[in-house]
View 1 (spheres, rainbow, N blue to C red):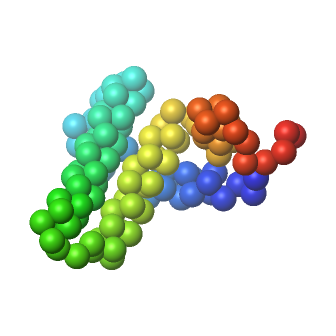
View 2: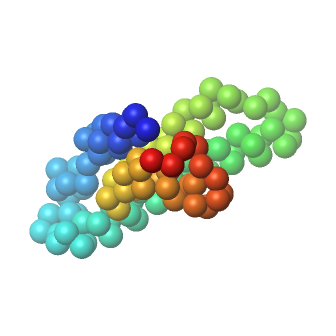
Length: 112
């Protein structure tokens, strides 16, 4: 583990902030209300991105070419949304890796 995912999480959090300046409705919001808003807003971003990916797939079902440029853009956006949500939940690279390893009952690295 090199910490690259942790660095990405921090970079994304720096540029994808949930504050009053960006979202005026957060003015006077409690920490719990800010978290609820942030989770909801992250879900909206993810749904929007998933829809764009689905549109590429649906076009291909009708004989269109797979737009790999658009898919790459939206794959990146999906990762941004997921890593921002991970940061909101205080999940680290180690937490994410552990959860994935447990899900698949497999390890990507030797036991530390």
